[in-house]
Image (cartoon, rainbow, N blue to C red; front, side, top):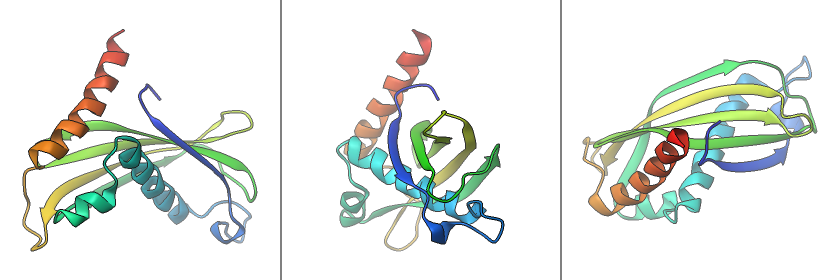
Length: 145
């Protein structure tokens, strides 16, 4: 994954595995959420602050592609970056890798729409936009160098 991304790591929990001993597909969606929460905190914009201000980035789409399984107690890395930023929403991209050998396990994206407390679609407020734009532009600069 091209920088800048935010990386979190943890051990696969037993409760996240299925009868075949591998991580159940639904767990990856939760890991994506953990990744984007960490990304927002790293930008200095915790998601709790966005909500406190009366805005939510509701999930409109989720995509995941499974490359290899993760298993109980393996340490995994979740890397998150902004893939697209628009006036009323954004898309996060994710990579999940096994920490021991950096094997690619899952890639994915979530697309989010900015809404207010009534559920109406809104433009991302200017100050929030500037924080997100800065992270997105940093990614673009890294790709072009």
